[in-house]
Amino acid sequence: MSESRIVDARGLSCPQPVLETRKVLKDLTGGRVEILVDTVTSRENVARFGRSQKWNVAIDEFEGGYKVILTK
Amino acid sequence: MKSLNSLLMSRIGPIITGGVVGLLAALLVHWGNPGNMGICVACFTRDIAGALGLHRAGVVQYIRPEIAGFILGSFISALAYREYVPRSGSSPVIRFFLGMFAMIGALVFLGCPWRAYLRLAGGDWNAIAGIAGLVAGIGIGIVFLWKGFSLGRSYESAKPSGLFMPIAAVALLVLLIMAPTFGPEGSGPIFFSEKGPGAAHAPLMVALAVGLIVGWMAQRSRFCTVGAIRDLIMLRDAHLFNGVLAFIVVAFVANIALGQFHPGFEGQPVAHSNALWNFMGMVVSGLAFTLAGGCPGRQFIMSGEGDGDAAVFVLGMLVGAAFSHNFNLASSPGGTGAFGPSSVIVGFIFCLAVGFMMRERLD
Image 1 (cartoon, helix red, strand yellow):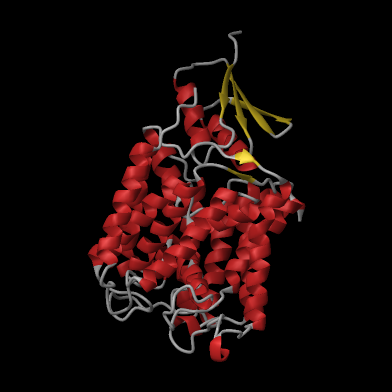
Image 2 (image 1 turned 135 degrees about the vertical axis):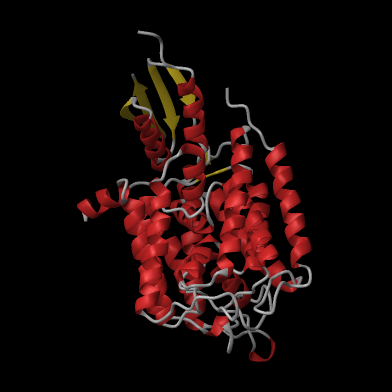
């Protein structure tokens, strides 16, 4: 399995967390991408986008934010 | 309660919210708000600026309890669901001016995106030019977003820092109820219109209750009248757009049922029929809202969640409203204000400059 890519989208306004995610997913056919966000809204938006691109979505909570884990 | 919450957070959350808000907006007109102005975030903020004496346009002065309700409903909801997270630091001064010019553009059109849709749902066809302008403005904003536009990151701040907007909302309600007069000769500082749109309002408790419901629902579902179009065009995601469709359709049906649907261009309530400046006003508004990350309603909702940058945008709107009337920028049913068109051009240049200059490399 290839190493995971990490996108730090904490503190960004809508829709930038999704755009940053999109930028990374565009070049990938599979693997693991972790997106760090700091609001529930961004977490949902990124997760919804991941699902729409047919990636599996898991969520991890950490101090001060969430990690949206996309795998395919 | 739990199932209602999961419903509001689901894909159909914005649809439910849009439908309920559309119905309540039509009812607010029935209960006393101005025509096609059941909810207008820009107009209501302008009325509050007037009531506080920041501008002296006598016909548009009233402390709209709906606005206080938006902030408090969102605040209570954010607290209840552990989403109250005070944060700030993403180019607040730029956001202030974006709020100011968004308001100036909205008052040239005579309505924010919420009211643009409500005007359409009430048969005011002048709204079509405004909505076309809104879409164009959002489209320009999207180009900047594709090119890497960013106002930078915000950072979590101390818990009490998010309390100021909810406290300000309570203070507004106190001022509305007490209506203190300690200005010279017993006038002001709180002014209430005796005629015109400012004098037309639903009963206080009804308007406040609607504001709280809308604030709560919009906080849970992330209802956003600008994000709706942005996400549809940019990401082919109709999640929020369906909410706006529900908002328009339900308001339209309710307006027909209540006898409030009057199709036409001329003689529409609190509207003018200058298509060019209806369009251009909303281009600037749509662009400013897109650069700031959300429509005016959403900015109020986020300010209730503790977002200090959204709060600064809202304060920019308040000041923009005052400038609009003091500098003769705002339109009236008679047409555009003397300096309305030039202010829109200045606002457009400002937004373009912000769009071109503000980039942030994240990697």
